[in-house]
Length: 262
Image: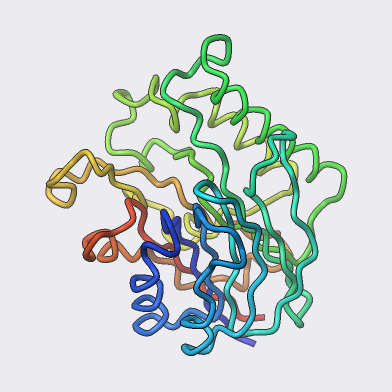
C-alpha cells in the first residue's frame, strides 16, 4: 500500500477550516495530522472533512489551546493519548492503521521566550516533555511507527535561517537540540524529511512578525516526520508546501509531506 501523510500546525482548525479543506482538495493526503487545533474534539468541523473523504478521526481537544488530530481517508483506531510531563495538555494522539502502522502526532510545547528553566517555567516544561518522550521510547521501543508533529525545535544548522544568530533563541538552543536528539535516539527514529532532502536550508515556519516573510525567508524547520527503521526505507517524496504559508489568513506553519510504500 502506498499512502501520503501530511503534518500541519493549523493554529485553530475552526478558524482555518477552509484552508484545511483547500489542502485536502488540492493535495489529497491520505492522512493529515494537525496540531494546535484549539478546539474541543466535538467542535472540530468533521462534517466538512468527511465530505472530502476524511471519514476517520482520532483526536484530543482543548478549548482555545493545544489540541491534536489525525484525519484519515484510511480506517484508523486510537491506541494512545499521552499526558507528557503531566501538564494536562492535549499534545499527543496516536492511531493505528489497518496495515499495523502506528502514527504518533505530537505538539511539543513552544517553551516561551527565555531559554532558562530557572526563570521560565515554560522552557522547563518543554525539556520535561522531551525527556518524557525519551523515556517512553526507551521503555517500549517503537516498531512500524511514524512520528509527526510540530516538535518546536529546528535541530540542524541548515534548519534555521542563521545558526549563530539563533543559538540563544528558543527552538534552536543546544540544550533543546540535545533533548530532541535523545528522544529521537531512544526510538531509533529516522528523520524522513532529511533522509529525502539531506542538504540545504529547509523551513516549515515563518513568523507572523515578518510581513515580507517570503522575501526575508527567516524560517525554521519546526515540523517533522520521523519513522522507525523498519519502515523508514519505504519513505520517499518528502516536501514542504511552502505556498500554504502565503494563503489567505494562513497558519505561520506550512504542511510537511512524506509518502510511504508499505
